Every structure is written in C-alpha cells, then in structure tokens.
Length: 155
Image (cartoon, rainbow, N blue to C red):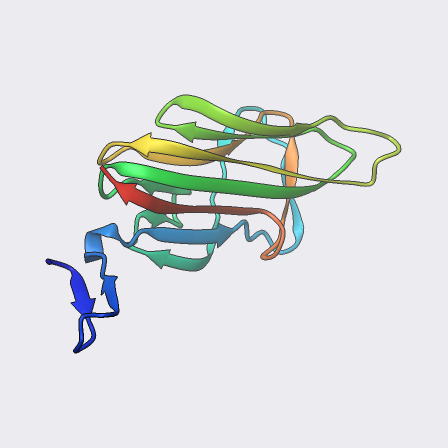
C-alpha cells in the first residue's frame, strides 16, 4: 500500500504521511515583554516567535496561515493581558469571525488569561488569522500569547 511501511514479517505497519500532509505551526507574540495595543481599529496579530512551522504555511511576517491543502485543521490561540484594558481576540477564516476570547477591563483584576480553539474545514488557499479588537490589548511575550494550528486530515 502506498505510504505504508512494514517490518519484515508484516506484523507491524505504519502509514507515512506524504509531505503535503505535514502541516503544523506554533508561534508566540514577541513584543519584548510589553503590551501590544491599544489600537483604534481591529488589527491582525503577528506572532513572530515561531516554535515550529512544518509545511511553511504560517507567515511570521503577516501573522496569516494559508492552507496548503484542503482539509480539516485545528487551531488554538491563547493570551495574557493586564486587567486595566479590554482584551478582545478573534480567530478568522478568510473574513469570517469563527471564535473569540474576550475580557472586560476591571479595577480589581490585575491580569487576564483566555483563549479558544476550533476545527475548521479549509480549502486550498484559505487564510486563518487572529485579530486584536479595537481599543483592547494583550501582553507580548514569548511564553504567554500564542497561535497554533495543524492539519488533522486531508479531504
């Protein structure tokens, strides 16, 4: 069977995915340990600290993931922020808001953490990215505010 490798007896076999099926990325918002935002408009976050980018589908210059093959993908994003401003992050597929994570400012809440995740059916060339909502902020640190995704299965 194409893509299948077995030991000599054929008792133990594994399926090896073709290179196009290997799509995994994980990146963090690098901003020198300071706040990112507050902006007057919704802004695409650019996660510049790339931990892994197998398949090179994530662009650390734009913050945008571009699907190299049609399939089901899994995406996550997490954030950390100070409580003095709102935090509003939204995961987009092309121009459609899919899921969000929000926290309102508070005088008695020093820090906020949040995130969300989604399985998405993507076609070749679809874009996925995270925006920071207008008049909100997150903390830019290599450890705390992240965006990740992987191909689960091709269609």
